[in-house]
Image (cartoon, rainbow, N blue to C red):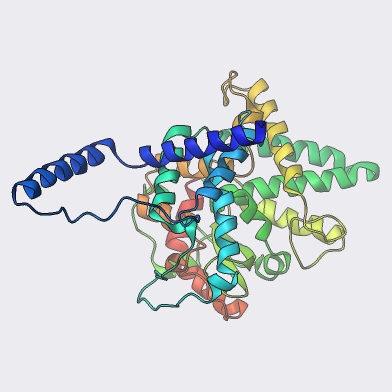
Length: 410
């Protein structure tokens, strides 16, 4: 039957993947050693000490069934990048099975263990954690490879031009009551692009922006002055704690459930009010606050609908691509041969653009990593979960040699 033939083909494919999951050089080396050892044992009239090669148990203890289901998905599921699915998509079949096993009677009764440090070790009989299944995964990954459409970055000048166009269109629409809502949405789009770029955020992290936190801290750092030596610096650590407090900055407030932290937490990041390339972070944040007030919103997510519901990322993604196409058509800042829809999106483009600009500005790699990994516990020097807003702001000021310099270099 057709189904049986497909099943057998998947079984054979899984075995071939397991065979190729090990390095050929390693396999040949072990093979030679085994044959040489057998000859030596024959001379000494000794039985070699290798375990029996069979028969195998009449049950699936190595995850072959899950491997077959992964291969069936590769045959029948449709991919987003190509007609077929990628290896990372197939891995979800394994992870779902593993979680199902962990919550089964066998999984919950397995022995617990304790290990010092961040790692956790637990003995398990889960088939998808077997060495054979690991070989299948390696072989499958080597065979399938990767084909991704990762977002690209653009020059900061292109993003600044994009924001200028958004501001012009929004100002025109704001003059008419009938198109005021469209204008407000454009202002939110501009603020979103600017915030993600200045803070080096991934696209979804921009939606953590907290409106109440922005309003509470918006006047802090407004009258700051940039020291002359800072204007001339190229990546030099010239900012003292006292100077940080007097720098012109604007407070970005983020709130949500963050990885490696418990419960809802607030995060404040002090950014330069205006970057070297003309990224007007303070102007866009103040405009975002004004637009939210016009919609009757004073707390909750800053990037939300007039009713207060968290907005859809697709709306911001479409807006970014629309204005990048205009920049591409009217300037030389984006190559004419680039497919904007394929290579740019709010998910990574602002962050990658900021990272590229930081490198060109001479910002050292350690500072870039600390800025771009703001969510991790190791680099969370500017926030604490249980601090009040005043303490959070004080802590955020101490981190300004990182956050301000990074955003000012944009």
